[in-house]
Image (cartoon, rainbow, N blue to C red; front, side, top):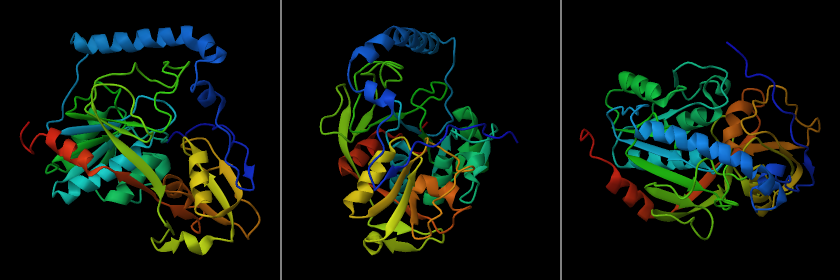
Length: 348
């Protein structure tokens, strides 16, 4: 198997619990300043490529395929992370509570493999991707990864023919997969400066048609859709590798070494601090970092604490690490709106 290749070095660790600064691009993306305007001509080329690709699908030159089960795509239109995977987990658990049998498909970003494969709860994250591994571990549903989502969907249905609904983790821009419901997620920065990459955070022009929007900010981005508020908080406990829980309150007063290889690590550190935890080290790593070359602090006094996404990669090497789950608080009306848009099982 081919390895994942060299990774960027970790961002400098923040001492004393101070959140790491946002990347240069993320700062540029929040306002239409000189740097954003300098990159704007390049974003016009990006816009042309996006428009050409969509046009080819509309004209039928490129074909979208449907797997024959209702498909819910949970994605975003911004780069830099919006919290899609926790929403996927929440949607899957909601469907399970309804008595349905959902399955999940994903590209498996950051994995060292390129084939189509099933993801088990104990699958190595480097082979299937950290987010699919977390979903399989959290939900106990069939999860398949493939570069082409339709291939993952076909493999999933071949192995689990009684699946009622397919939830796609990411893939809003993966037009080759036909879908029934699109859910778009925004973090509290919304659409930023409104420019397309690389001058802004948008992967495609906004507003664009979607069915439902979940937004962490106070005001939803403009557009013709139903929007629902989304709040993210840390659970009041951390989880050991054996599944047992440790109350966060019991960690107060202990020096912690916090690591986060997510799109917005500063958010995780800030939420830990809001729980009155003492961060002796707050180390931001590149999103999807595999931890192969990572070394923890040699000071044994520091308890290692991380996100759930990072835990699936850290636990094989550092089983004493504590993972803090992220809890979502969503308007129940969102799930009612989702249910109303889903075709009845077998109705396609």
